[in-house]
View 1 (spheres, rainbow, N blue to C red):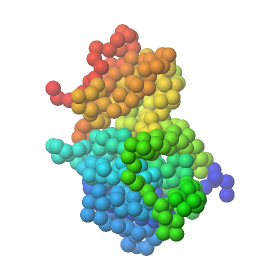
View 2: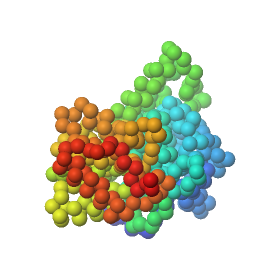
View 3: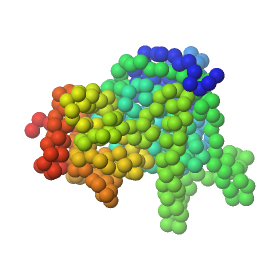
View 4: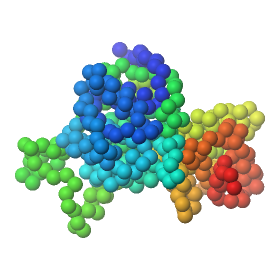
Length: 411
């Protein structure tokens, strides 16, 4: 069967269900999780697959998210393919162990149904939770819709488990906007998914016994993971994680391309996903589901003769510096939309990263920050169009009145 002729099944699923279905197809050995809105549907649905005998996965109901990720680390360290999911305060409770996961080079896949952090209590979607973990050593990919959530989970196992990467990975979906919205999702046959991912492989390491063996906990070949490493060795361990990130930069693009041949779907080059950017003069940079709304606005602006575009950052870690510099090289003005805050900083996480990437560029567009959508606050297409109106004025005048705008805020 030619790859282009693979028949896919159309299902109606929300984003959480699409993630659970993808995990079902990925031959996962261990799922350990604790429920939290708006992630609960993921592990709830997967538990049904376990109860119905549709998967052979060991499902561990833990007493907290801290315990869930710890169970995944232990299972992954022995060679199991592992998955968990969380959001908001649950992800924050994992904080300590997220660093342990990446430091021990355990390729756990974690779905994050992005949600605001307390206080005050809010269960709706923004990126505060995962952006707070941006330096934890995890790969970060953000989906635009339920279809991409399904596809990204499948890709995630292949990326994280690559022997030259060997790092854990987040797949982020906007809470409620994607997690709870029913959409069409085209799904691959399970045997095709499993062939695409393959079995887990391991880096080969030299043990204290002088044997070269797979990097996993095995009584037959004793080794230590995450040992006490003081001044003499800690620095080198952290540098090795950076090498894994560099290798992931290429691997994400390769897997995106391979998956496109299999499914007919690709997401830019896997790192960035531009829309009508080739001849654009003004553009918005964004992460997540907001890109879908912005596409409608850009299409309208194009009919009016306004050269507008979008740059959706799909992969936030590793940060695609060169791709962003190249994509923005001909623009006059750019707005970066952040669905999180960095109190006391200049703008927020995505803005800071983009602006930093452009610092040494031969041509730098005027760049401004728009913080929006905190706690799930909605922005209508008419609201979002005003950002392009602002950019048009900035491009014409050659200057911005202010660097940071709190968009949609009552002041």
